[in-house]
Length: 399
Image (cartoon, rainbow, N blue to C red):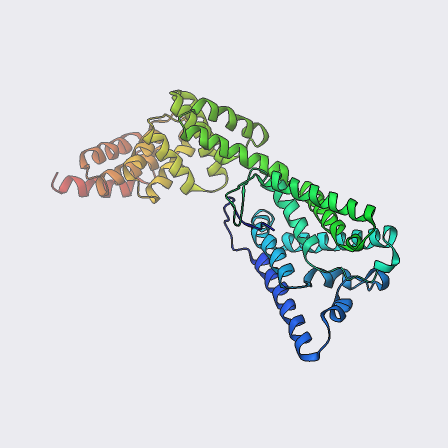
């Protein structure tokens, strides 16, 4: 049997739940082997206590069976699927949801297998224990396929790397075929847990749909396509893709930024300025002054003028740039605010521009010009005393 050992889906977090489930399964398997060795009880005897036995179902076994593996090969296969696909699922939905998916799919798969066996299989086969994490892992695989349907899977001992949907489709067809055939033949394989796998997978797909993971995947792939288009020198295609993102998520900060960059690449700096300005204002609304300063820097770097914004917004950006250590650009923004007709703090803007010129930009002449203007236009400013002190220092010192 070829086992998946990797996918091309990158992880961003430590898969805590997946690792915990792996440890629990391995620990229980070791415990069963130790009990078998120490007590002399047969594996079959132990399994009848912790696995689902249709002839004498104990409700708690619907939980315990999914952590119980029949042998080392069974454990290896299930843990391989859990490790490969569980980490991706956890990255998408978190540790708690991943654990819940594992349990719900395991319970559902076990219940379906029990019902099929007791309804369609001869009673002589009802004593066969049903054990293993297969149903839970099938559910995890179903969720993974819904969230990362473009991912490719690598299989041990082969160079084959099919899309996960193709691999899952083959798996599901095999399970369905084997499940139906076993019932038709009415032999010992009829008690095999094919229906548990099918049930777990189906419930996993249902959970993924309820959690809107296919939609999340579509949004993510749309963003990836847009990034790739711009990297490959196709800004028009990238712009179209980002427009689709913004149609569904008008406040998507990344989409707005990338749209602005696309307009820059296309040479339309007016539209680029509109998008950059929109993003700058959204960052300020969120209280993220540092991000707003970064957008102002990008505007300056691309030689793009921002759209019409209030003088108070210009002042806020100037202060953020100053805090970021971008003194030259901060000075330009303070000067712009001082020249804005609607500015209610022109005197403060003039003083800030003068202070930067004097103390950070080594430009005392410009600083003196700003301070003289403040004295002339705002003789009663509350900043007048501070401005006079700075002017006296500049006039008395070497120029």
